Image (cartoon, rainbow, N blue to C red; front, side, top):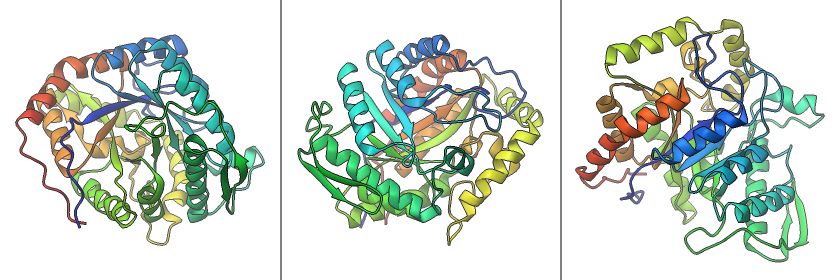
Length: 372
């Protein structure tokens, strides 16, 4: 069985820098700010430079270079109200949110933004945030079982009246949400994204999610995940969109781009990177097959804390565009991008990289579906 190829242009999202410290754990200069005024201007700039989505990060307490952070759902709503077309994805954690409460908040945000609210359901890697708040920390696969129930509850509340769920983690009885989000045949519920690299995450995506987010990967790594997610979706009579993380360093010359990467890593804040590595090692290796997030990440990879360097979007506009189009040919539907200096580099991406991507897409042969 094969995944159905998409003829749509590849979509672009950006990581919202609503957390201090930027997108790399390094002392290199980052002309990026976590405050609202900066991010409001960035959101408008992004939607005018080819970005369809923005993802608001979620941290609940200071950690690993992220000393300060704005809460993701409220920040996402503020960005939605400051823009006209941008879809904003709020990251949330089951265990810290109840699906019924999030469904209510999301329906309001969707009405206020005329249908542009989305959510990224994060199963959780940072144990200390849960224990500090007195919440029980589940083992890896149990976190994904809870997330699956959470997504089933969220979608059910958004699309059904008198919704019922008798689960192991959530029990919902005869619950009707009014108003519901702006459901349409093209979008029966706000987009539900989900992250994770593990086997449990891939299988769950095929059963319940609209979108699967992968940490940064090279071609082989992305292809392997695509095969697994598409196989799970096919077994359940569904299709799942695929998003891939990448940190982009686009410069006029490859030498300049590579030198920027070298400087980022050379100026890594070692205690923060090592602390992060220690915290996520258990997340990546706590699965039976060690396929969890960060299981094979080096120190250099973790300087960009979602493995964004692995995707290798580093070089001239032409080199980066070619690589993006090759990822699309594999089956990637969306690139989730981070930058060093957001305002300048988002504008550079829109004027220098994106036109080449669209030109290459126009001349690209029909994608051959991956066998699964």
